[in-house]
Image 1 (cartoon, rainbow, N blue to C red):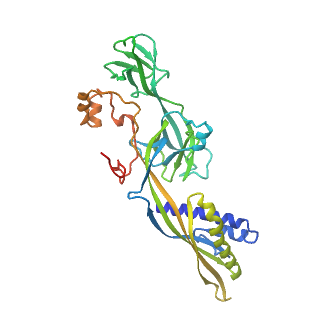
Image 2 (image 1 turned 30 degrees about the vertical axis):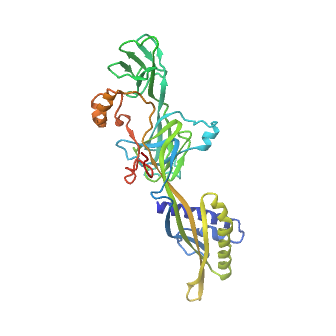
Image 3 (image 1 turned 90 degrees about the vertical axis):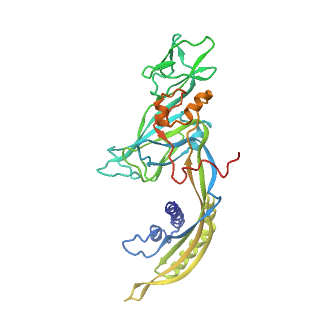
Length: 415
């Protein structure tokens, strides 16, 4: 985190410095290209500004850095047997929701994101190209949810869902209005290919069926995988942030709901970072002018602009001046000066929560006691007589970090 945060801060400061000096008619042609974070020059330039990070200190805002519980329409999940490292995080796209009159633009469901290495014929400079012009791209395969649907009654025993097909294993059938779960094979049979449900015995006249299921939506793609970038068009309303760990064959999922639900716990704090700037020029007048104007820009102009982004420049100071030999024979020198500044900024990470419940059903005390001590594997082997299913049946899980794995509470537990 320290390296990523300081590097991002350096890029932001360099952007501000380059923009400031690009408006100067005297120095923009000889200085702007030499405002860098390293001495990455084949030849020493006549003048330049080099920004270097020196130190950083964490400022905790709470005992365990916990800040809040995040509620969101979407959250990230991993797939069994896959690395799940291509996407770093997901967030809501506030602008897309606003344009859609406050309604989340994508339907509820699970969106599988598969990364592939393909020859697309064109190369995006912002995307990694591992070999032979091939490019990493990703496809989105949605598995959409249907909750509490009343299927069409074709006969006293046969019912049909609204979709032509449903995903095998996702169907849940309930007898209403008592919300009594039916068991596959005992109370009904189903054909995923035709979307039909056949009951073993007819329902009472005053009762009806309610079903939950998933069906495959239309696949979209390919989309180029950005390196250290984002995509907000593949799943409308969701911002997908990719890092540098994308690889061929990786699969992750984004779970989308129709209402905002607790999706993650946010841990965060502040970092106080110190940066040093080396300013060099061939004459003392240019060195003094560049140093003075850079210092005043950081403290008076950039300070207010960056404060709106949560970046606070708390201190700007001057260092000493020095000379470096340019040509010993001609007794020629570089003239250097230094500026040091302290920046305060926030950091946060989101630790995903477990999956939310879609329906609560009544269970007899004897059945509840029977399944309490069973593992997921034992529950699946028992045929799930209570309508409960193993987590692995869904083929996805919440990404967890070893440090936060057992943190299932906030500061304290009130009994």
